[in-house]
Structure formats: structure tokens, C-alpha cells
Amino acid sequence: MNRSATVFLFSLALTMAATVQATPVTVTFEDVPATGIADGYGGISGWSQAGSVVNGAGEGIDDYLFYGPTSTGELRFDGAPVVFHGTYYKSYAADWANPITSISLFYQGQLVHSILDPLVGGSLEWVASGYGGLVDTLRFQGGLEGFAIDNLSYEVATASVPEPGVALLMLSGLGMLGVVARRRSAPGKVPLGKR
Image (cartoon, rainbow, N blue to C red; front, side):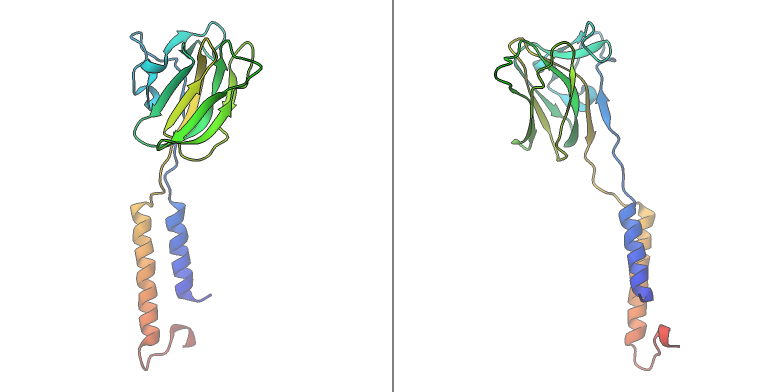
């Protein structure tokens, strides 16, 4: 491989390697203030319309869980779309003969994935998303007496952002390609590899 192609490929590899990694967020409900859960908690809105935080009395993963007393509730991720990993979930007074879609995932108003009710008895069950695409809204469907969730997990979707120094290196590499190409095309000059 010639020198100019090597410089270009090295610069390109460094540019692509420098990305910002997202950190997963887990919403546990353990630090909700005494005044109650408010929109924006955990980077999510819609809490007050969907339900409230209650003592799980042994059902939650820790002490507290989120309980939606009606059969439906909707939560929206603030600021940016996310990749939803999953949540602990339970429906109350579910119809065991007719399993329901427990969680629907939406992006820009379109349904992108559905998760069936795991229909467990005593405590909450981890329900993995099974979907790696972008999500901006979750719609929960519970049994006749509502639903509960705990330790909801997601990460904010981020684009790859090259570091400033890497971008400079890439431009330097492209400049070197230009110099090499110009030297090769100049009349009367001997190419670098032929000396």
C-alpha cells in the first residue's frame, strides 16, 4: 500500500475511533422527594398523569416502585430519543386468558415495538426491551387494577463526535495526500518511491 493511502486510512481510523459513549440511566424511585414525583425525574415526563411512587411492600426491587392505578400510562423521554433497555414490570388483576401488550415503544408518534405482559404472580419481573432502535415514548398497559414498574433502564442516544485533535489529524492527513499527489503530477519530478 502506498504512503498516501496509509496516511489517509490511519487518519480515518483515528477519527472513527473517537466517539462519546452514553452512560446507561436506571430510574429507581428511591430518591423521590416527599412532595412526590415530578416531570423531569430521571429525564422523563408524564409521571403525575401516569401514577405515583409508593412503598413496594416487598414487591419492588428496593423499597419504592412506581404504581399506575389505571390500566394505562404514558411516559416521554425529555430532550433526546433513547435506547430503552427494559424495566421491572407487573400488571395487577390481569386477564390470564388474554395476555396484553404491557409496554409499547414509540418513536416520533409511530409504534416501533411491543412487549407482552409476562403475567407473573408475586413480584415484579424484568422485561427486556428486545429493541435496539430509538424510542421517545413508552406506553404502559396494565391489568384492571393497574401496573407497577421499577428500575427502568435506558441510555440517551448520542451521535459519534470526533475529538478536536482527531479532526486536526484527519485534516493533516488529507493535506499530506494533496502534497504527495501534487509532487507526483509535477513535470520533471521523481516520485517519492522511485528515488
